[in-house]
Length: 150
Image 1 (cartoon, rainbow, N blue to C red):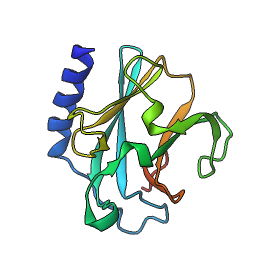
Image 2 (image 1 turned 120 degrees about the vertical axis):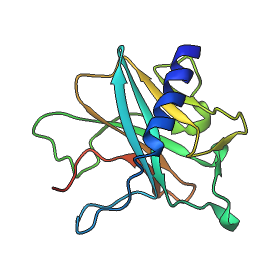
Image 3 (image 1 turned 45 degrees about the vertical axis):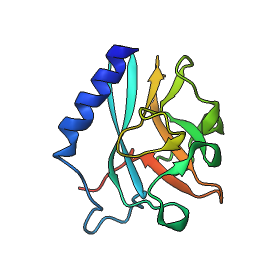
Image 4 (image 1 turned 90 degrees about the vertical axis):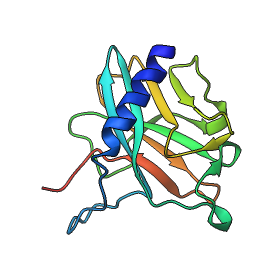
């Protein structure tokens, strides 16, 4: 577990120099919080690479108790612009550090902090996966972009 946290921290520092912003003329929606995936060792890590998100009263972080998650799979031939097959969903607070999908609240403040928190999917399926974080109103606020523009 300590190795995973160290790995994520090193990746976050390395990727902070290559922050991405919204695409210029791309018709695809860009989430307020962009997640990037990194894989290795039978695990898939979701890290924040760009955030323009602000929570209620202008707070940059949302309480974990207010958020939900969806993990969707896409297989060859699926509509990557659609919702995909949701294989796991629920309150973000239900994710722990021992399940197949884990949320690592690095500062342990019970808030989703785009700057330092990350998600870990152990033994990911042989499919394209998308993790979506949903706000209390039901709007997705974070996801990994599985399609891009040239």
